[in-house]
Image (cartoon, rainbow, N blue to C red; front, side, top):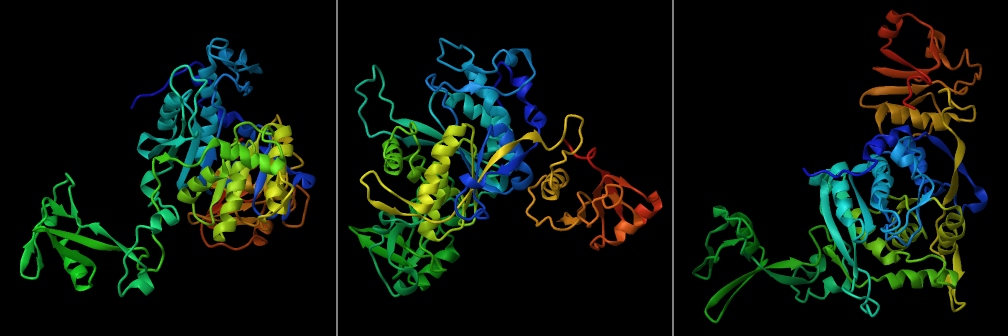
Length: 533
């Protein structure tokens, strides 16, 4: 497989492992509605924020959408990752400008994206997908980058989004009307069918009705014959009809058995027109379970434009210049609908104006879903005055640009910032401010490589792959003396929830012989040294 190389690649290939784990600190005054809603807006460097979120959400996200800097040369974004290599040290804090001003701007963009994509991959469920918006500036490099990180076999599609109506009066050469949206799955073979909810454009093709109308709805006719070049002899046979044998020019779509059953159930329409036989099957609007057929997602997305996103921001804030080039919620709704379900977790680590959260809230209102969102925005001013404020208005209701009241969609979110101090101190000890819950999430991630969803109200965090995982820390047994409640002894062991089988116990120390540990099927891992920091 072709691979991509650039200045600084070797320095960032493992940089995500060196980023310290920080804690999420809630900011109640910037939160909205129910703080336990499961929705989250995090302000901070997204590389550090992703690392902080990983212990809680690894392996749980169904759909990731990101809209990173396009690297057009007009954005003024800053490469500031603290990577200790000579070629990158000289970049730190430097504004990335136009090609002629900074010839290494593509290298910087790739260095910025690489560790973030490696972390984002860890958030995905096995049937999850990641979508990334971009234009032609980095498209050719980004596809190779995704091939390397996610695997070329997991490429789903590169969507072409027609973002503009037309125009182009200022263009000196080609009028550019489109952008791209890369889509890769964690494991494409586990992705399943991709469909959108039925819409009016789909329903208008279903014009006919029969005795199945009450349960299956109207139907349309689809040709049973196919011109597929994949020759399959078992699909070439004669259909008996009123004393005739009807042969396909090449082959049928269905097996003989399925075809005969369809004739028996009056699901085929066979006619002779101008001496030529036509065989069509009835495709009902609803499937056998009474669910309407969904619409297909096309590789070219039309009818949703950048101007729609600007208009939405103008409606919310009375000024379309609050945020430049926001994505329209309709675009994100279409993608989230196609690649998630009603109870999915959606992540956006380049949140910007907060369109992803807006789209999730819209979808939940429309179909009664319970989707959750996690947003990360680096810029403090944007995070507080645009990202959070926008979705607060969407949730609670607001007055539009005309002064008309707009009803809120309901919901809520918790706003958080990153702690200044990491989970571990410079000498590798656990920071004194770390709670049992926070360390439990980290222990679970270390042991299982998945996010922790338990209650963290017991030394027994849970059972994974047949082994029980325990944590003794911060007085969880009611004794805050570090020489007692956090140390595994035979006496302490008797107070632990019982599990028959392999037990992994994280503790500051152990008291007990190897024969006792073996008899009780215990493996002790000493904190903090057993934790990958």
